[in-house]
Image 1 (tube, rainbow over the protein chains, first blue to last red):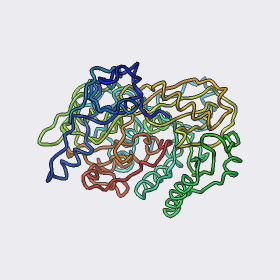
Image 2 (cartoon, each protein chain N blue to C red; image 1 turned 60 degrees about the vertical axis):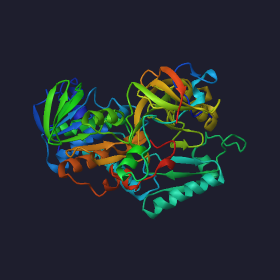
Image 3 (tube, each protein chain N blue to C red; image 1 turned 180 degrees about the horizontal axis):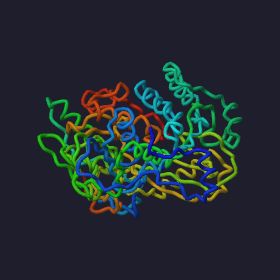
Image 4 (cartoon, rainbow over the protein chains, first blue to last red; image 1 turned 180 degrees about the vertical axis):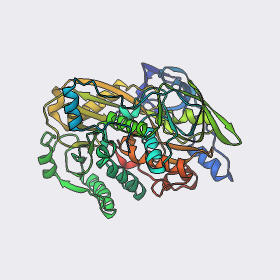
Length: 91
Length: 420
């Protein structure tokens, strides 16, 4: 059963080319940075849970779960679901 | 309580019938916003209107405005599948949701407004021995807490729901079920309208088409909200805006642990009565009940990506319909009448967020995710208690924002497809 799907038409994986959007599982907000050891409880909770949840243009991690398995960063609008540039995620 | 409102009754119906229906008055006014109130509630859905009602009724605070950017009950209050139940595992959840079911049971009388609460029972199917054990665990936990719930054998559930697919060879054969008999469905619009009418009757201003565009924060406290209809000051503010919570929080200068996604629902063409209960199957990913009009009301799981689009993805629609047809093969001949989506604010532990926000005189009611309608009476009552006293009610205390830092999460991730 398909659990990952979105918006219109295909998404273009930089490694596999255009594929159905349902192949790309959502993986979170790439702007969230993991705090270092010794951070406060508040910083750790913010890293784990606090999110911007933008309405409109957003950047998001997507993993090409049913393709190359690579983690990607996609530009996508959370209202229109239109997808922009998709690039390789860099750690 | 609703002294300024003429009572709705069989006698009033008869009288107005004889008078040509000319004596009815509007159920609530649409006043211009005042410059200043004692309390302002942002969000005119079920939770916001219920909070206004309880501020007036429980705490005697009637100089209150509910401000709503669109129309009353036009968000998730009018988009859900109207299921009311309290079959949860954790004690904190059981307490708060069961208190809500208790209020719902007397709500038509309390509000003098027929919310059509039909306690037809909610059935959660199990499709394997392991799933049956899972249901047994929840049912036991509920019984320990004194909440009515019981298990059904395969034969019992098939006798109660004769249209269920009885085949042992289908993808998800029915092995047994759990039932909460006090659970049921209600008229969702009537819940919003009944609270609006009762609150208006006690002096609350209900202001629609009034969009909050900013907060005026002085000395760390909210002094006023800037709206599309002017600046409105108050001593205390509450927000009950579901899928709009992240943006509203951003306007007030903080973030929330919420992810907004689309949850869709749909109804079939109307049928003669054929399905008495609410029937849900988590592995199938769908649940269904029959409305008083005869339509099958169908819901499923969340869509998998963040969205504020308020429309359902066709792939999800197809998946949910396939699941319903798998559960009820006879429904495969039906036409779908309508399909729609709402934006639900999901929290990390599938439990709501009730309590103070990082801004001291702004209180939160959000994070109900897919399950807010069943909690409208208690969610409003808790928000009103917080706004009036500045302190938690016993029932809302475990649901504060601080649990995400302390780690005392109330994990209802198992709550299933009909967490609704």
